[in-house]
Image (cartoon, rainbow, N blue to C red; front, side):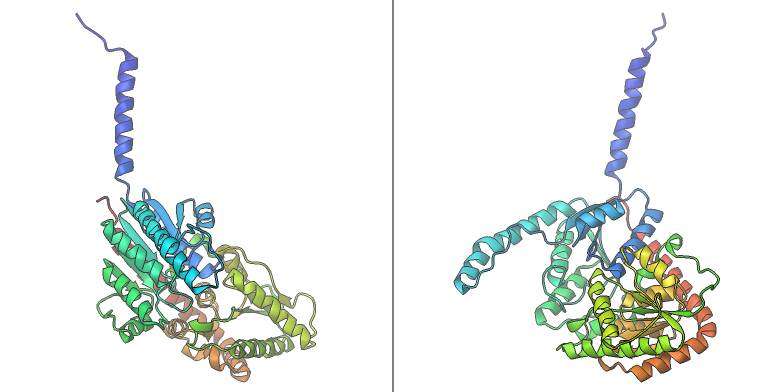
Length: 434
């Protein structure tokens, strides 16, 4: 006698097997966490996250991704990934002036709150395979030890190792680090890393100067050089009647530039650029104002006010000032220029990525290092000693030689992209289930 198993039982059996396989596959997915100052409107930082996230999804498509950042709501919405706050607020701060009250609050609220943040960090990274700190300038105490300063980076590095999670610093920059505590935290976090690479040789030299041996660590270009090619606008044949100069303005770098910043440096910087724009307009060039951070919008407004105060008269449309809300917007604006004069590091870098001849107004060793690596050292000036006549001279020389410089810029940018492909292949080979 032959018995037949009812079809619904077979279906249930296969469904349970399928569910077990799906659950097993989900458990074995690599779990990756990124850490950085993302989601706050700095387009340079966003470009590094976009670049590494694109290549992670290209090479490890089934990876489960979390981002530990300063703007988690924005990051979650923009990149469709889970995101958590670097240092969440447990209890709202109080404006206390009494020293004793401050001490009591620190002992009974501040310390317990921080212990809670450590515990929450452990819960966030538990089961994660790799914590990646991608690019950007996090290795500095120029703004603060806390927030997205070196303490938070150190804290999350320690938490990662406590969770048996690998720690990668990928194409990072460093400096300035002014305090002994900041130096200790940065060196300790780097010491814990399973992989370290730096975006330029000047970072290696800087780390050596503070006592961290980085000689055996590789140097790879800034991650923004590897932005997906689909995001990069194609340069159309020039149809503009005049040369368009992209002028990248930046909120004063302050301690990111010098130990004792003076507002006089910022005012002199704006005055020089007013003279430069006046000269450009007189020599039949249009100007497109560029920013690299949402905080730079105030600078563009101040700059335009200075132009008006100087009774500078120009036709409507000669100075173009359009809002920027994303890396894509910024790239399209840079693509609409012929030559770029910029201050922010990533404004310079993205212009080079788009094969634009560039003058860099350098506020940090990374700017001079980038220009040197691209063979353009003669087209750089220190923001602390910026001269209008020198800037005009550099511009004339750059414009004259733009045709011969573009092939070199394109070749070097392609070399950077290839080097970063090699780095992605290297680090993502290690991203497997534990």
